[in-house]
Image (cartoon, rainbow, N blue to C red; front, side, top):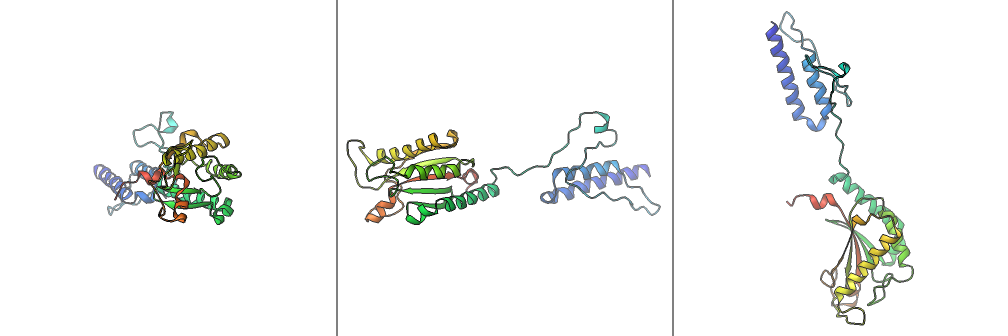
Length: 254
């Protein structure tokens, strides 16, 4: 009878582990641990009809650390490791997506006037979020110096971006019309100089972590509109602030 009772106890613990493995998403690791401890600590007594009469306690989210038969528990003063509940990483896809959406709403509320006037546009991409600073309102044609009032708009956006941990890439773009003046020999230099101008403003006037920032100049080679019209060229002359969603870039390609 003693051997049979031990066998039933081991079977019970085995099926508890199987059940917990199947429903792991519904229970935390500490709950599984408590169920296993219960199986070893409370062998079910065998009645005269051979049925078990004990039932496991209701699983709780924060079980106390206990020891099994023959093992010293926490009350004995022995070193016992308690399994802590796992938490969702900050850069998990779900949390990251929520933060991107929250950031987009905050920016939309803060710079709604600039969005309506066409100076700024905001849009989500597979990489994250793009804040587009159009040439109108920020730069004079063929120049990399910020227009009056443009710096304050960028500071306002930087203040909203600062609390978030997303990497930020500053991209300069231009149209395909050749440029050659005393300062810039090509659209490469113009687009890069504009991106650097915005980058330095972000560094010197905000609390953005420099390790989050990077800069790139693409010249005319990443247009968002046709360069065959004046309106299209105007859209292509821009500086993009790309908020990179790390979780999105790390997801495997399907």
